[in-house]
Length: 158
Image (cartoon, rainbow, N blue to C red; front, side):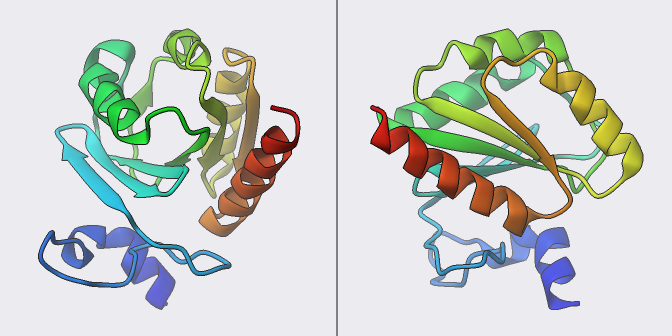
């Protein structure tokens, strides 16, 4: 019950002047380092794991997400990272625009968190447009574990 409340109401937990626990529950202790809020959604930076929660009804595309992406890349610098789309709201994605994300050398993979069958089918379709590591999972903890393993593996081979 508490986990669901945190995932649904993250805005109440983040304030630049508050020292609070992260709004997401992961299987290990992680520090929320930065939060970017924009018109299309919110990005939570946990070192090199980035959790993005788009707002209800928006369309995520290269055009609508470009400023968001640039701001995030400036913050991340040259360190490898994993993108987790925590799909707690219903929104649209232009899968053709994955080609732009694919060109980011520091992006090692994408995890889509969606508990619904329709969400899983849509994400499986999206995976066809992205030629890096891509996974669809039911919960945020699974996405986080996958991301940490992917980053640890890429360190060994870089």
